[in-house]
Length: 301
Image 1 (spheres, rainbow, N blue to C red):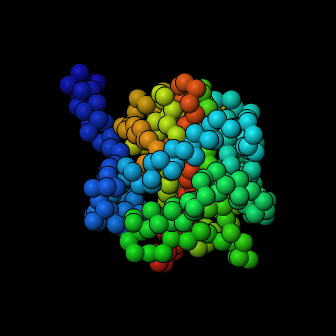
Image 2 (cartoon, rainbow, N blue to C red):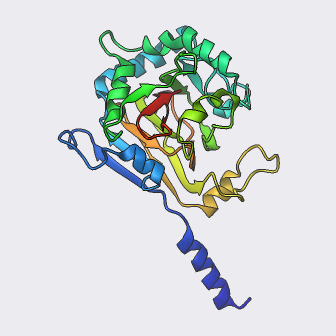
Image 3 (tube, helix red, strand yellow):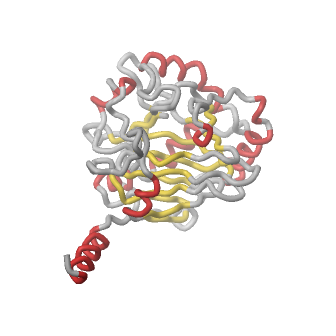
């Protein structure tokens, strides 16, 4: 192929690289309203991949909880579903059976096991905040600002049992979350919920309680989960990060206490940078989806 043709082909590949579609707002500046009041639906539609709201929650309240969680970490019942993979060894409060694949359960857990864990461990996460702060209520209130007037409700099983509304997640020094996406509707855990929601994507919501000294950024790629040739390592179980970084656009987001991000986690590959220093990265969050009729927003973790 002549050099000029090679250059044209390279330019064509560069021009077609999908950008990461992100927007950031400040909660204080947006207190009288903003044009993202239907952002969840706009994430579904592909207008945005990431929405960041700075100061979405009271920073002092979340920061105080994050500090207590870090200082008193050894006294708390952290679940460690990825302990077999030291780099991805996230600690969880609120469940010991998360609604995601893990190294402990690569195909996720059974729905009944998840729901039993939800009932048994709900107080572990809710109890980390100062008296008077209703974390679940605060999360639903904040998310309602992006729900287009739809009610925001915790998902329930067909028999009425509640899903986990949110979990606390802690990444200690030297840990990370490797590149992945979260389109989990094919798991047995979702056999009921997948019938009731719009499964075109799944949105994650994450609020920061404690930021590390360095690292811990969310990195989002223009690579989408519906592409057929996403580069994987030879084992077939993990994405080839070097190839992903070379092939796709990316954007990094660093958040502080009180900040929230919404991410099209079922659509975009993403990861969390390795934490550097003795301060952990501590967040609270989970997933959300529009119901099938786009009348409600359902949340779970």
